[in-house]
Image (tube, rainbow, N blue to C red; front, side):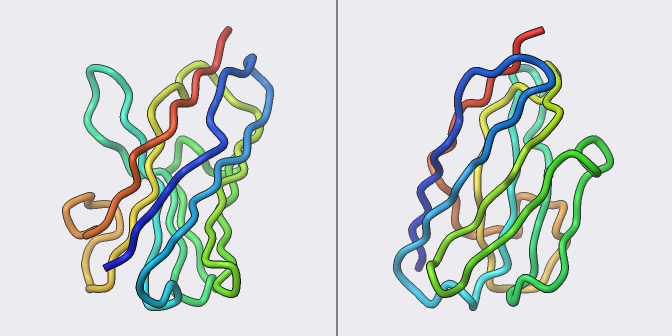
Length: 124
C-alpha cells in the first residue's frame, strides 16, 4: 500500500495563491493514478483534479479549471496542486488520493488510499 501526507494548506485572502503538496511513501509511486479531492462543510467530497501515472495527462473540475494546476514528480514521490486566484468557495479540506485500478476518476470510492487532509480557508 501507499501512505500519503498532505501539506501546504492555510488561510489566504481571495485572489491569493497556495501550493499543496502530497508526499507518498510505500509502494512504487508511479504505479498509482493520483487525484485531489476537497470536502467542504455540508457538501459531499468533490473531485478537484487528477493526473495520470506518468503525469502526461491532467483533468480538472470545471470549478477550478484555469486556476489550479496539478503536477507530479515520480522521482521524488510527490504530487502538487498549485492554486491561484482563490475564491471563498474554494474553502475546504483538501485530500490527495491514489488508486491503482481502473475506474471513474471523479468517484472517490475508486481511490484506495487517502491522506489525512489539509485545511484551505479563503477569506473574502
